[in-house]
Length: 243
Image (cartoon, rainbow, N blue to C red):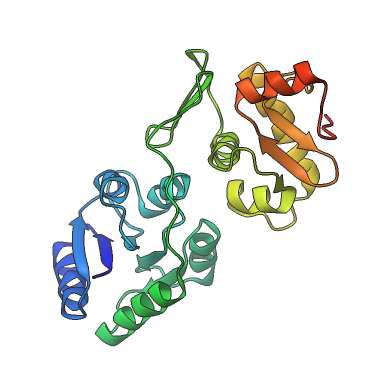
């Protein structure tokens, strides 16, 4: 049975949603706040998350942002806010659908069915990325280079996390904009370039010839684990890298 995680702090709503989904042959797990929901997302790796926006402590949008550091699992947002701006913000933050309270039983189940029908198998990040030089803990949002903790902005963290999750793969500026910026509308490729330069400086990888974060001319950027980057420099092959 498909596994659905319901993150909702109102016990009555959580119970109703869980009952409806269980009757529709879904395996349901519940969490009552954003932090416990985030832990459940990583530990149980559900097929879909039903996530309330108005959660205590870490709200739903903050939790969604952190979920996107871990996985592309489908997320259905629930909210009592019905303004268009709230819906746009939720979708741009990474939600796959948005359902306003109060909702009918049939609509909730239909939206869950539609999301699961369209979804491909979710990809999941490792709990901790560690290549011997760079260490990233997505759950705690901690970054260390050679055991030195590095403080990054949310965008810088998402950019680095996206690059390392796709290590060795060249990602276009458009792809990175979609992954790292909550609202990429009107933001050009130069924004990615300058953020990459700032990220390199913070990580201590200013030298473009040896930086594990490579610029690939006319295409985008890729991350190579430091051992591979050192080998590339020593062998004299740059792969058309540029600053």
